[in-house]
Amino acid sequence: MPARVLVAKPGLDGHDRGAKLVARTLRDAGFEVIYTGIRQRPAAIAAVALQEDVAVIGLSILSGAHVGLTAKVVAALRDVGAEHVHVVVGGTIPSRDVPRLLEAGVAAVFPTGSSLSDLVEGIRRLVEPVTEGAAP
Image 1 (tube, rainbow, N blue to C red):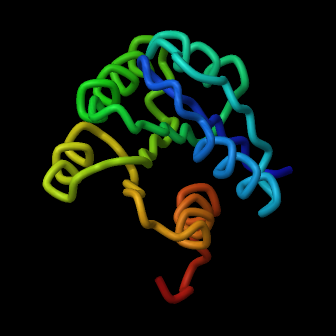
Image 2 (cartoon, rainbow, N blue to C red):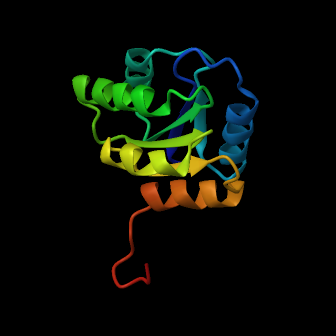
């Protein structure tokens, strides 16, 4: 059964072309993808993640509010008992903010310019079990 990934656009950012490209790329790579659409609230993202039993949430954020919105999504996941769901963030993210996102509980960050193949491989590493004795 393919891993389920939720692609979400939190906050007021109305640009979704990149999120749709990511959703299609992940689907074509064999993941089951749920796309929530634009302008989602963190609590709603967490509720959908729980309801859809996803392994990963991919947040697409271009508004500059990535640190605050991501922290709110991670907190909302905790509130609904879904802290096991991996959160990854992509979009317009300055390198200086990557450590802050990782400290907030994000599993991976894919800033503008990240390749789609790196994204797919990053998600695979999160959801596929590590084989005993396999090279990292």
